[in-house]
Amino acid sequence: MSGLDLPLRNSVLALLEQLVHRDGLGLLFVSHDLAAIARLCSQTLVLSGGSIVEQGPTFAVYANPQTREARELVTSIPGLGRDVRQDKP
Image (cartoon, rainbow, N blue to C red; front, side, top):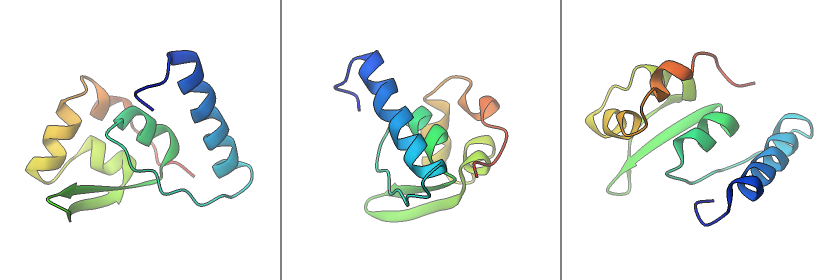
């Protein structure tokens, strides 16, 4: 997603969001783009060295990260933990 210009990125995210929410598509979204993850994913896994170090509802992981790795990810995006307040369907 990082190689796309903003309008194309938003179009791709909107299409994925539509497929997940309207059509019930299952989605495994692997990314460092935390804003896109917050938009698309109800659950989040944080990996470190190929191992899961934290997992849970996306809003909970972003609002209250329990591990150093998750805290570092969330704090790398100013305001992200405060902006994600409700669970995605």
